Length: 283
Image (cartoon, rainbow, N blue to C red):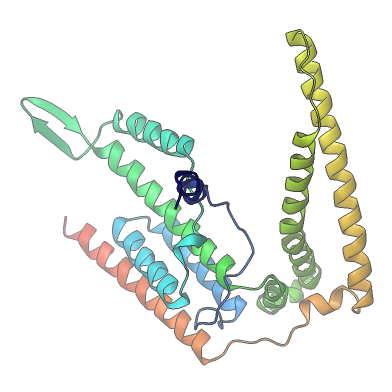
């Protein structure tokens, strides 16, 4: 093996992993086979739980639930995107500024009183954000986009009593979810094509600013044209397949495993709330 080949392999290993959204991880598992409505109910319930009880016990319990789901679904480590360095810098800056706020608990070191309340609050908010991101990522990794609209139509059926257009909203969300990855791919292609064009450097700063503004306008105009073309193609495909009603008419319904998953989620959340409430009462 030559030094050039090893260097090239090293660069390939260090290449950042992009963020992949709304694309399920290939494979089959109990998490993949769950009804999409069950996953949406779990996400909604956990979000409400963490809104009213954002304590460490609740966050840790939900994190354990998410990690267990990742293990059951066999999500590979490569599915996680690479974290850019500037994000680590922002997190460190936020931690330092939050730590300066002080607060309880206060620790005395060599006669100096240090308050770690702000730092602990920052860590708790960061952990809560990571748990919610992981929960949303699990839905994206294990759910087909085509299953979202029928699940929303079934879950929102009681709202039809007050004449809320649930089916139309579900179809609009389904179309948005389907178009989002396509548009990201188109924009990446447009940006790569724009970078390949020869770019003559302007002599003055004012001319460079004007050139950058003109290039941005050209890129936005091309993106709008591509978006309209994609919308026209998607409209023709929907019409050929029977209209928008087919997008929210899938016969999927919850099964025994779905009720079991909901029961486990409720049990874990209830136990975490009970433990945290008892802990606060005994303090």
